[in-house]
Structures are given as C-alpha cells and as structure tokens.
Length: 520
Image (cartoon, rainbow, N blue to C red; front, side, top):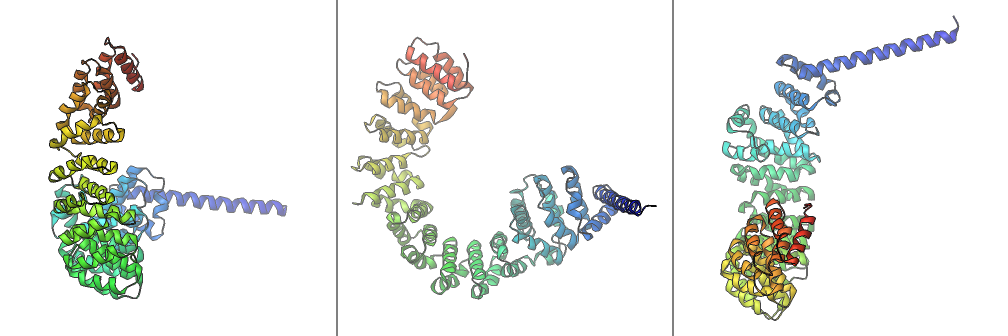
C-alpha cells in the first residue's frame, strides 16, 4: 500500500480514538453531573468527589440549567468536608442569585463543622468578587452569634424567607468549639491578607458578645511593621466601637504615618468616646490633617455632642473645605436637639455665611424648637439666609409655620416664593388648607406656587384640586398641578376641567392630558 495512504489511515485512526475518548469523557462528565443532581445521596457525594478531585467541577456544571445547579449544591453539602467547603466558596461566582443563595445556606450548614471548613469560609472574605466575599462574611457573622435571634436578623437581611426553624436546623450542625474560633482566626487572617481586612472588620463588628476579645486581639496589630496591617486593625477597632481601644488609637494618631492616622481618626469618630474629644477637635481644626480625616472627626464630634464639641462644629461651618463644612452640618444633625440652641445663637451671627450654614444645619435637625429663630430669619437682609431659613422650616407636620410660609408665596422674588412652595409641600397635610386658599385667591403668582406645592404632595390632593377648579380663575392652576401628579384620578379630573366654560382652563387641561398621553 502506498505509504501516503498508510499515513492517512494512521491519522484517521488517531483522530477516531481521540474523538472517541472525548465523547466518552463528555458522557462520563455528564453522568457525574446527573448523579450530583440525583436523588441518591451516596451517588451525589461520589460524583462530587470525582469532579472536584479532577479539578473539573466548574467546567462540568457550566451551561447546566439553573435549577440543576441549585440541586448540585446539595451534593457538596452532603459531602460536607474541607474540599466541599472550598468548592462551595468557588461556586459563589455563579451568575444566578438563586444558586448563590442556596450556596450560602450550604455554607451555614457545613462551615462550622470543622476547623478546616471554617478556614475555607474565612479564606473567601479576601475575594475581590463581592458575590463571593459577601456570603462568606454573612456566613461567619451568623455562625459566630451566640444569640439565635441576632443570627436570624443578620441572615434575613440577605435571605428574608429563612424562618427560625430552618435557621436552627442549619446552625445545629455546627460545633461550638469550631465557631468559637471565628474571632481569632479572622484576626489572624486579617494580618496575613490585605483583602481580608475590611471584610474581617465587618465580621468582628457583628459579633458584639465577643467585642472585647476582638479588641484584645486587634490591639497588638497596631504595633506591626506593616502599615497596611496597622491601618486594617485601626479600621476594625472603629467598627467594633469599644472605648477600650481609645488610648491606643490616640497614641497611633500622635505617632504613626499619615495614612494610619487618617484611619485612626475615623475609628475614634465611630467609637465616639468622650475621652477622644480633644483629639478629634485637634484633628478637625488642623489644616495639616487631610480633609477626609477632618470630615470624619466632625462626624465623631457630632456623636459625642458635648457643648464644646458642638461649639467646635459650629466653628467649622465656614471651613475653607466644602467637605468639612458638609461634615460639620452632618455632625450637628447627629447631635440633634442638643445643637439647636447653639445653632440659634449662630443664626444671629454678624457673619452671613455662618447664618446660612446654621440654618442648613437646623434644616437637618428639623426641630420645632427652632421655629421661632428661623421665623425671625425670614426677615434677614441676606437673601441666601432667608432662603435657607425657609427651607429649614419645611419639615413634615410643622403646622405652626404654615401661615408665614404661605404669605411668602406672593413674594416678588421668585426664588423666595419657590422656596416657600417647596417647604409647604414638605410640611404635607397641615399646609393643604392654606395652599388651597391661596390657589383660589386673586394673586396669580401665589396661586401658581400654591398649585406647585400641592402637586408635590401626590394623589391625595387630587380631590382638593378638582374642588378648587370650580373657583373662577383657579381652574388652570389646578389643571397644571393635576398634570404634574398624573395617574388615573388626575386624568378623570382633567377631563372634567376640559369640559368647563373657562377657555384658559380648557386649554391647560387639554395640554395636560396630551402630556399624560391621553387621547380624548
């Protein structure tokens, strides 16, 4: 036979063998996948072991239907050892939420069975993929709880459908001597892995009953040579919120690098220990501190909320950095009622910028005790102060300021009238009577703003607007407001207005219906 044909024959034979082996391998893989999704527990486990051992698990299940992948999770849960746990963590990269949620339940079932299983879950918290990292964090937060009610509360933020009985069934499979290792193992892992430091702090922060144990293990990390380890420890201590760490964090701020100092300032701000007030005040007023840290210090002073802390925050309202200004306002809002009187004093400052910022802070607090001072500021010669005061008066059910705000709807300065309309809209139901009266009055400008305020209150005011449309001259303003609200009740009211004898009202109603996509 010609040598060329012999070579062809050999080649064809080799191809046939390779194809045959590939087909057999594909069939074997499919059989294993089918076994993992089957009803026989032993067969499920054996198939899972075979695929994981050959590092073919993910390749084998890729492309399988979602329902089947959910069933396959059970095979790994049945297996339940270190390798199964490791594979479950990797499996969290699945694109479907239902699959990932089933994996989370499996991790809760087997993650606390052994120290090795637990470590595999901990390894997952360093992953950059949030689909992997978050379920591992939740698993550790739930497994580490001594209180089942707290465990259920944490889990149901992710899986609302898991009831107490099912949760208990999952947690009963864990060993207490294993779950007791979560805190030390997480701290140890945070020291080794940079990506685990933020998530590790989240795990520790959720385990309130072991808070002091966590603090004791983290404090030595503040002395480590690695700046990243020190920063991670400081951040975690802030999340834990224990005053025990305050002296150590103050020392860090006095001696460490700029990066670690910034994190430590944020940690002290979260802890809000009055013993750290002077340190936070120094950080806030120091222009050598970076602005992010200064902003964090402002928030911390708001949590401490002593008279001195509040005075410092008021002084920062006109800081050169806008981020710090905003943080000072947020800090004062956090202080709440305790900041009202000092802010009312600031509202009478000779500095217009201070008055503006004080009004903005009072807006965030939304206290009726500030009404008298803010009403006085309605006569401020500075237009921006006046606008800020109007806005600060506009909070839900603040009925005592409705009339003075309603009077401003006819202000010749449109920005003032507009601000008053927005404030009355926020007050809600107590402002509707006054707004309806203005809507049906003789001042067209005021009526326009009253209609706008009512339209911001939604479908509840549709009957009021339709009733107001019966008053000569008010129909067109009512129609504009109804068009802004939309919805079937507004459409029905607009159709009736469109049949009125008032040509202006008819035209506006027709235009509003067209904007709403209604053909008459």
